[in-house]
Length: 281
Image (cartoon, rainbow, N blue to C red):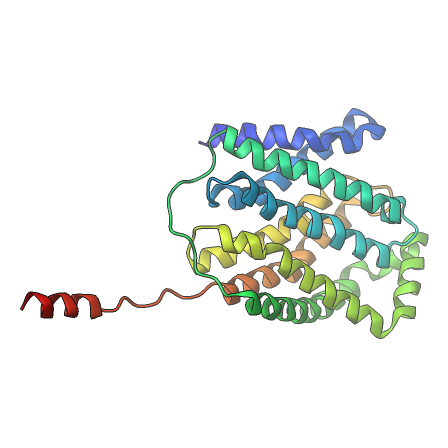
């Protein structure tokens, strides 16, 4: 099982390695590692989901496209507007890349027989629950972003933002946004909550495991994996600081979303037994 999973992550990650082809073999290796970590991050979705390719594909695509793709691009568009990878044309290329990667991840999981067969289908809330978790996800992310983002900025990253032109321009743009920044961050939190709803509805695990896995998926797909490959603006030590900041921001969103969406198991009733006893008598 472990060797099959390792080979599976390596093959899926290899597809993403072309993103660093312009930087030579060195960057391709980093992008390959990024693809492997990203695949491992969404692996619980395909492993604990039913043996249905389309449902696995939809759940994985939602995470990759909305979290790794659009949400990350939107954050970069706000804080790093001058970077080439945050321009509008880069978003379409990113969504196409993650769509193909989602097909590869969902398809190879079945080919390598990594899809589990055990477990019962979880009980989740109806459509009204989706609206509720989007509101909750937006509020949770907004609070965590404000608290932990402010702490990291004040004690770790403030000097760097003041010394690099691209980041300084981004901070000036953020200040000009005013209240609109809170609307954007609320929307990103709501979008991330929506992104993991299909995975929460598919993963055949208990409520606590689903909450932990959903939080981990948002952290890895929206933070850890994306900070691996080097970029010309943000140095490595700062990227690792961002990794922990994103953990404190994204993980609570996934945890709360799964906790709300999942219903607790209803206690078994003894009415059928009573009726059977009365019938026998």
